[in-house]
Structure formats: structure tokens, C-alpha cells
Image (tube, rainbow, N blue to C red):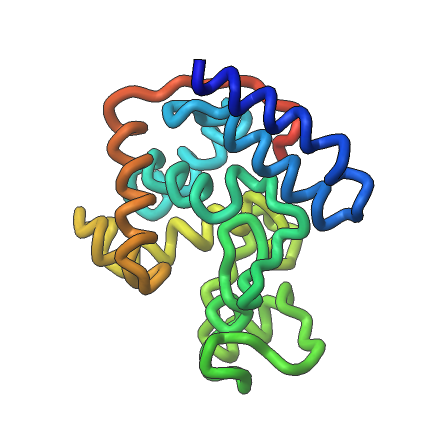
Length: 202
């Protein structure tokens, strides 16, 4: 009954909010998707991507799925840029992607128009960005590149050795974040369901 009532309320406010601008359209879409997804749900189209990236860096693919859900609700955030400047499917700060040796803010933002996909620059400054598709670019807005980069980051910070909490805290220094990702990770480890969705990136 409670879920049905919430659904009716959400449907009622959509008509008002979607006409007020793209920001509200995005928030309503994200809220509707979050409401409609069960805690066990993983979009089936992303599972092969998670598995390939996780196998490469020896971490559980279900951990990658949990991070993806918490970071961008399976890439439904539009645009995929947070209020603090994190970007892409798995929400990396630009300096993490391109390298903290590159000049920028303490939070990890960059103040110029450097090409974040440039592998030469990433290698020079010690960034995490990975070209998983072999197209010569490491693009945080490419789901494969972003998933591989997230897998490597988590692996390097403890996940490949089983220290999941340490890896998650390194990814986002918030205990609330760690707890939230762990919540989905434990569900996915024990019981998950797959569904086909039209919003998947490839």
C-alpha cells in the first residue's frame, strides 16, 4: 500500500516538474528509476562489462556493480557531472583520472581545458584513466573505460586483497558512502536479479 501511494505521488508531480527545465527532468527521471528498481536489480547489459573489468583487476564484479549503482544509479544521472566536479559513469575527479601531479584544486578539479582522454598526458602525470576499448583514448564518459578505471582504483586500494572497506573509503572518503555501497554489494553477492533496460550505455 505504501509503495503504491508513493508511486501515485511521484506520477502526480512529474507533470509539474518536467516542464520546469532539463535539471528537473533529469532529477525526476533518476528518482523514478531509483524508485522502480528493487535493491536486488542490476541492469543485464552492464554485467558483461563489470565481469571483464573485474576479472582484469581481480576484484568481485558485484562490487563494481554496487559502486556503479551508488555513484550514478547505473549511469542514469544526467549530466554525469556531480556538484563537486566528479565526472563520468563512475564519478572520478578530473585529477584522479588524469593524475594528481597535474595542477588543479585540492578537491581534484582542473582549471583549464586539458583533454582528459589524452593517454600521453595521463601517463605523464600518473593518472588512473584507462583505455579499455583500444581507441586511443581514456574517456570517463565511456562505460568500458570508466568501469576498468574504477576496477583498477579499487584493486589498487585493497579490493584485490579482500579489503573492500578500505578500497571504498579510498574511492570516496565517507563512511556513509562505504556503508551504502556495502549494502548493495552484500545483496548482490547473495541474491541479485537482472532486468533489461533501455537506458544502458555500450
